[in-house]
Length: 221
Image (spheres, rainbow, N blue to C red):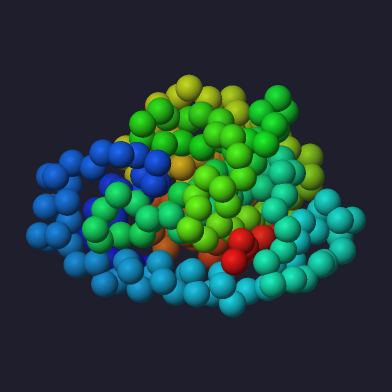
């Protein structure tokens, strides 16, 4: 497990790829007291593993058939987990961002939590929204299509709730950060914990890529 003292400052900038403001105080605090080498190595190792893995495609939508390819195919099926390595607005960390493919009536959208507007549907494929970044989709291995859909519906019910800046308080349901929202959708609907606890009581977006409960379905490059 990564040193929790380092974790705390890393997670203060987690999921802010769509946020335009990070306080100077946060940057000074990070640079002055918290070395970034452990965090950077952990994040780099996760991304390198994801790039070595071969996407299997959306198995549940293909009647259990595996269609392996170098990248797989993007899917708009309800409940699929989306992750990007898009850089956070910090000179030290690449914390990424996570969301969940939305159910009707939010077509071609993902439900996401961002610091600037809390939980909202965001429209468009992530390849286009996060141009130049790597984009991944993961499925939860043990759930049914109905459970995935219900997780997406649950996430949509959180729309308009504010952003959760306390990254270790994942038990609350009145506010969310990006990967907490995705994690909570599956935990509350199916009882499956898609976290790894490598970050203690916080959920890093890249944890969802490294979970024993998830499978790589798609990678854009």
